Every structure is written in structure tokens, then in C-alpha cells.
Image 1: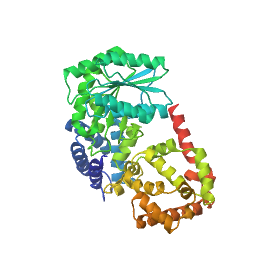
Image 2: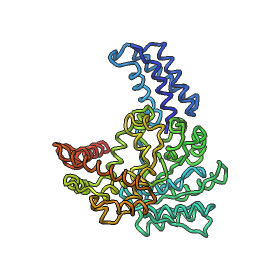
Image 3: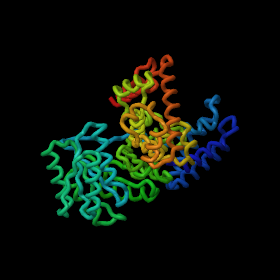
Image 4: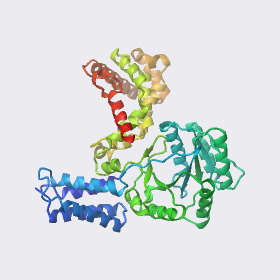
Length: 459
């Protein structure tokens, strides 16, 4: 995500390397490179020029200020602040009002509406403790209705659908009535899309919105389409006046133009960003965090939040006791892998850690890295999983046959597991070392503190 833009912006800041202070000449040179980077990322030239003119004005005002700060660092700070403003300034999550709250999902075909609908239901169910109902109103593609049904089963959220009814307005109204009758407090209405904007689609989505009077209307856009996404968002907004934008496929080879300029063009906030197909890969859009990632500074706050969602304090205490007794086993290892998988894809997670984005850029990292390890463990008996010390040559041969891998792979994993187990046991004996890096060995203290501070900010 944004790799090309990040590299180009880094090159722009390098023009200031070796300079003792900001001057009109080196500012102009750096700003020129920043403008090129934005245009290459598919940001409209007018927006890029206005953006860089503001940066130039701010930088010129800092010529004789903060002489202790390097010019490159100062320019990075100015660009970061302006990127945050360009993308909306503050996070804007959806507001849920009424019983039930109704959320209308709109967008072109292929933008990821149906998958997003499922992700949103999963997010509201887990993060906001809601009881959502999904309503299938794409009456033109039976596959879309079936897809929503499969997603609903996957996340344990009911789906209201009528296979024989071809009136989406009627289906949406019946879905809301069904939600009221069955105590669902949120209704998510997934609508039909087209390959391109046409009057029939616009008329249909307008009629649905007028009939159901949703609390929130969200426009879903494929971020990989760049400036086309911005133009489509503008056309939809002129017709249905939606409340916010959702950017999907940010894990793809996107140049970032949509994320950077959609708020400026449409005047509506980006509310969510989606990466990957997994239901847990939906995030509230935070302009400040996204700016940090674009500038290669990572997003450690989002990383910690993702970890907190999977962090169970009671399980952590039990795990810590096992580690101290050197009883960490393959079942515990599987549980840790599951937590990492639920947090999202590995490469995306690593890009949130400052400095890691550049290190992992050219590495082929994905969830399949765990597949071999899981296959080996699943080929063990329950007794072997609980007692790693039972491993011998005959057991290893049976496991190798069961998982379809060679003895060399099995031996390598078992050796690595043993080394990791010993290291964890050794570290658990050190003073002040506890789970999740908590001082004094109290599990979850550090993460809990971050969670409490975040709650106070929300209040």
C-alpha cells in the first residue's frame, strides 16, 4: 500500500540532505518532487498543486525557526500535517441511531460492496456489541445473494433474502420490519451495482434511500481505480448525498490517489478502509495514522489496537504460567498463530511497525507462511501436541507422512520450536518480564493502559 508514493516522497526529502537550513531554493526543489510524487500517485494535478503550494508557504515561514531541527525532518513534519488535513483531519466512524439503525451500502459492481457489508456487520458485532442483520437487495445477481449468505454464515450474522422478489425497495422495507420483529439493532442493506454509472442504477439507489431513510449511506469504492474512483464518488454524491466513503482493496497495488484526494473533491469523510478478504480486515480510517504510514513512519497505534482485540487477559495469565513452568506446547503455539491470523495479513501488520515497511517491501510474506507449521501440528496426536518431549524418530516419520512433508522439514520445525520454547522460558524468569511486555509481570497492563487512554479521548 502506497509503496511507490512513499518511495517518491522519501526521494523528495532527500533533496534536503546535507542542507543546514531551509531556503527558498531547496524548498522549491523539494516541493517540485513532492508534486511529482502526488501526480504519479494519481492525485489530480490541481489538488497536488494546491497541496504543494501550501507546503511551500508553510516551509518558507520556517526558514529561520527551529535551527536545531534538520531541514528534512522539518519538511516531513509539514507534509505530514498537510496530508492529515487533506484526508479529513479526524476519524469519522458511523453514528448509530434509532432501533434499528439502518445503513445503506452503495457503489459500482466489483467495488467490494458485499464483502464490505459482511465486514461491517462483523465489526459492529465485535467492536460495538451490536446485533446486525444483513439484507440482500442485489436482485440482479443471484450469486451476490448467495455470497452474502455465505458471509453471514461465516460471521454468524443472519441474512434477510427473497430469491423470487425482484423489487429491491420492497425487500429492504421487509428486511427492516424483520429486524424490528427479531430485535436486531442494526440493518445493513447491500444494494446492486453496475459496471459503470447509469441512470437506472442511480434511480434505483435513490428510490431505496428515499423509502428506508437510512441513518448512514456509505459509498464503497475500489481504491485501485485511482482518480476514476474519485470521479465516481463525486457522481454518486451528487445524486444520493451519501454520508461517508469506504475504500476497499488498499492491500492491492494502489497508488493512493483516491485516499489522498477523495475528501477534498467530494467533501465527505473516508469512514472505513478495507484490506484483504478476511472479515477482520476492516479499520476505521484515521487520517493521521494513514499519513504516518505514507511517510514510512508506521502505525503502531493501529497495530496495538489490533493486538488488543485478540488479547485475552485470562488466557495470557494461563499461558504465562505454562511458559514459566516450561510447559508451552503445540496447542499453545496454534493458538498464537490463530491470534496473528485474526489480526490480518502478515505484510500489512508488519508495515504498521515503524521501519518495517521498507524492510519487508520486496519480501513475499503471506499467511501461507503458517500453513506448513499448522499441517505438521495437525498431523500429531492430541497427546503429542500436549507433550512435545514425546517426539522420537518413529513419531516424526508418521507426522511427516501425515502432513505431506519431508523429515527435514519436520525436524527443522521441531528444532525451532524447542529453541523458542527454551528462550521464552528463560525470559520469563528475568525480573520485570511479563506477558505483553507489562512491567512487573502483570499480563495486559501495557495494552490495557493504551485502551483506557483511547476510551478517555473518545469521551
